[in-house]
Structures are given as C-alpha cells and as structure tokens.
Amino acid sequence: MAAKLKQAFDVDAELTAGGGGVFDVAVDGRIVYSKHETGEFPDEGQLVESLKALAV
Image (cartoon, rainbow, N blue to C red; front, side, top):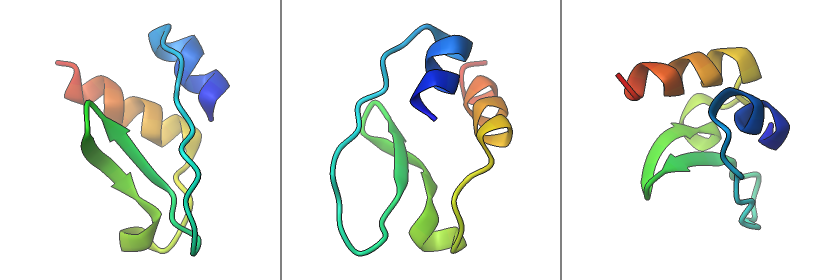
C-alpha cells in the first residue's frame, strides 16, 4: 500500500501500529477509509482513485 501511494502521489506513507484489526487511511488527520466501517481492506487501486478525487 505504501508503495502505491508513493508511486501515485510521491509521498511517504506513515504506518502507525494499531490493534484489533483496525486499518484506517487518514490524510492530514482526516479518516478517508476505515476497515472498521467497511469490514474489509481497501483495494489499492480504488483507494488511490478515491484519494485523487479528494485532491481535486
């Protein structure tokens, strides 16, 4: 996932350890994807496209 984000946005993703199966993606402190809410890990391609849409 970090490599995909680096490739798409030229940023270094920060991995923060969590627990209980939590997997959230945040941009500038704002949660943009939550495995807790969806019940599944994000598709990397769909996540990148969603983040690109936020940048517009």
